[in-house]
Length: 68
Ligand code: SF4
Ligand code: SF4
Image 1 (cartoon, rainbow, N blue to C red):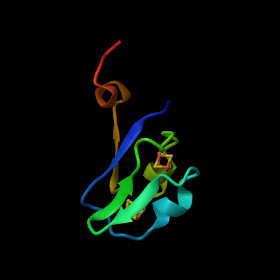
Image 2 (cartoon, rainbow, N blue to C red; image 1 turned 90 degrees about the vertical axis):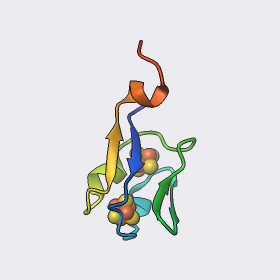
Image 3 (cartoon, rainbow, N blue to C red; image 1 turned 135 degrees about the vertical axis):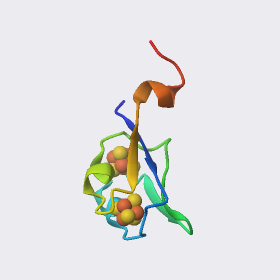
Image 4 (cartoon, rainbow, N blue to C red; image 1 turned 180 degrees about the vertical axis):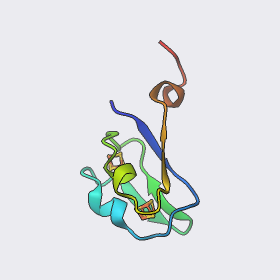
């Protein structure tokens, strides 16, 4: 499992992350892009390709809620 990502309010609805996502985990809502965390494989394509830097990376252990 890779890192977890979250979309922030900087999203401009451009849709590029939906194009980049290999597993179709990225959807769009009235508030911006939304990641289906159950489907996301943590590849980071959306994070790297967002022109607005609207996606934040979360520490994997923080997202999992436990520290090994
Ligand atoms: S690429 Fe970035 S700005 Fe564009 S829809 Fe996705 S999160 Fe929003
Ligand atoms: S990290 Fe990868 S799998 Fe997850 S939403 Fe972004 S592009 Fe899709």
